[in-house]
Length: 164
Image (cartoon, rainbow, N blue to C red; front, side, top):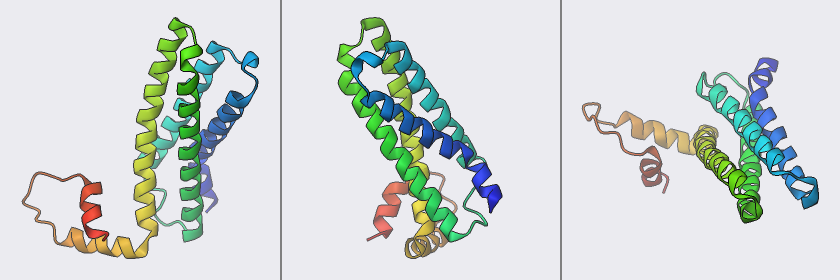
C-alpha cells in the first residue's frame, strides 16, 4: 500500500503546485510578475504531465484497496478543480498583461487546457472503476462487442447509452 502512495507522488505534486498557484494568484497584484506567472504555469503543466505519465504507465488501480482508490480519485478531482481555478483566473487577467508575455502565457494556458482534458479522462475512468454497478454494465457491454468491427466509437458516448 505504501508503494501506491509513492507511485502517486506526481499527483500530490500537481495538487501542491496547483494549490500554490491559486494562492499566488490571489495575492495582491503588485506582488506578481508576468515572468513568475509563466514560471508557475509551466511548473503546474510539468507536474500534471508527471501525473498523467504515471497514471498512463501501469494502472495504479490494480491491486489497491478500495479506500486508497477513493482517496486517489478525490485527489484527481481536487487537481481538476485547482486547474480550472488557475486557468479561469489567469484568463480573466490576461488582458492586463503585456503583449509579449500575453502570447507566452496564452500558449501555456492552451497546454494546461489540453492536460486538464487528459486528467479529466483519467478521472472518469477511475470513477467508472469505483462504481460497481456501472463497471458491471461496462463488462456486459464489452462482452457483446463485435470484435470484427474496426471502427471504435468514442467510449463516453457509448457509456452514456448503457448508463441510463
